[in-house]
Length: 337
Image: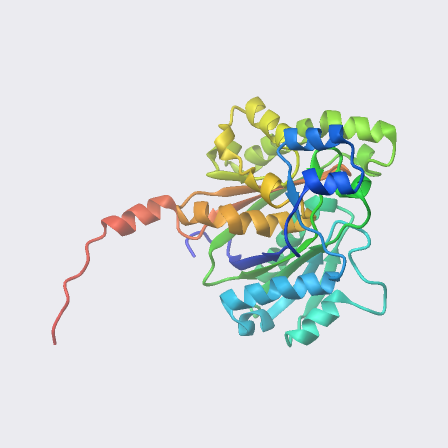
């Protein structure tokens, strides 16, 4: 633990996307999505996504948790003192008396001190969930782990699955285990900005136009505020992990901030689709952990179409400077007793 300001980190993360990935060029034709809209989606970097008509949110969560358990062991999952579930879609929680949190706790023998859900922040909610879980864990000397779960499904035809002409919604879930020791990275500072005039989302033609016109600018301002608040400029992060939608917006943000385009991880916009809050673990696993292992910080951005935006810096467990010192350190000669 090289920085006492950030005592909590991520031990492991996993995600699950159901079924074989689907191609919008074929699926769109089956679902009567206009060829013009398909071309628009391809033009902003979108193509593949995942969907399931048979798996519930709990099924998706269990699949992600099993992958996490294979990494970290079931005992560490069972030791989580705090259990947090976050989702974007209002229907991604079953109606009472069923509870995703209770079902997960029973299956993995969890006895959490506190469990709750984060909602109403759309795809920015996962940053809030990670932030809350890390704060609770840091403030509790008797707790060693916290577990953050995400799940979202999308129903309906192309008019529902297409994300504002800038993304394609994927069904998916993820599981992220937080801890104080044996971490892959440290959870750094988070910054939030809410543009409340858009809280209804794309429910009106005015909001649809405003979101399309100003969302990139709101995200740019979030990045600038995050840099000022943390002392780490956006350009000083080894990689920026955006949500998996609309590469055109992300490239515009990068140009406006003089960030090299390769600093953005945009591959999963094409390869995975936008799995809402699960994009965090997905992009962390597919790209972020490798950058953190090199001793460079990573920035995740959770933005939404309801005016909620959030940025989270992840710090390497060992910095690049510490890695260099370790490599230069002489190896002690073996001593024979």
